Amino acid sequence: MSDTQSPDQNEAPKGALARFLAASPDSVGKTIFIAVAVCLVASMVVSAAAVSLRPVQEANRLKDKQVNVLQVAGVFEPGIDVTEAFAAFEPHVLELSTGTFVDNQFDPTTFDDIAAASDPELSVALDNDPAGIGRKSKYRVIYLLRDDAGDLDKVILPLHGYGLWSTLYGFIALENNGNDIYGLQFYQHGETPGLGAEVDNPRWKALWNGKKLRDEAGDLQITVAKSQPAAGPDFYVDALAGATLTSVGVDNLVKFWMGDEGYGPFLAKLQAGEI
Image 1 (cartoon, rainbow, N blue to C red):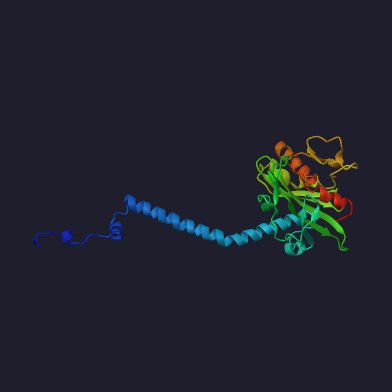
Image 2 (image 1 turned 30 degrees about the vertical axis):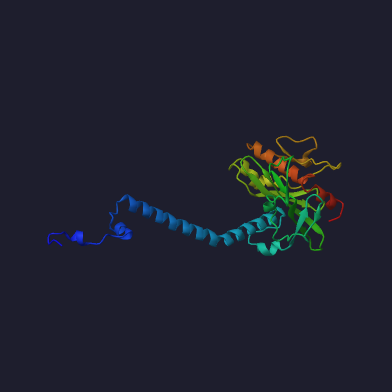
């Protein structure tokens, strides 16, 4: 070997890692590698956080649902033990077409009727769909509230339907006669703040108290509109100011779920004293 050969010529070829480490910090390759590595680590951290927080999120979602049931039934108070208060409600899985309970087929405490609406075996596609929901579950979880003597006090029924921008999910509370409305409220929606979102306004929700579903002939008359229907004030809830389409959506979904395609068969049994 020549005495004049440079030191670099005596070095063995560098491996890929060595060449990467020796590269300039400003090189394109190193910049791209660092960016990809950071994104990968960040995505792993976010995924891990999402998985670890899922039980907490589910628990909060369940508690929020329970709070809304208590509120619509008029038994919620600040500081109340939600779990203890909710235990007073009887959950039942209702078969909509027959108006009968099927608790022997499904566990009322775990059955997810919203998810069931996407299951072809547990749901049906709707041809007449004023609520804009596409499919409905054949079964819904409802809640009965009894008084201290064990007599039926209120019935809480879940309902949902499309408004202007979103599907509104909520509950309607009926008195034990199955016709007088105690309250209605929504726990999830994406309507316009200050307009359609006024479905959450306590003053508007209070308008539902004391209204009736059907007249003496048994015809469904409850109406959300800008003007009073011919049936009279007992069946009328004033529409939301500036939120015509949301109001129409609420009108449609209430009529759908209180009608024959919804809880009609159950309400008929309730009024006949069979529940």
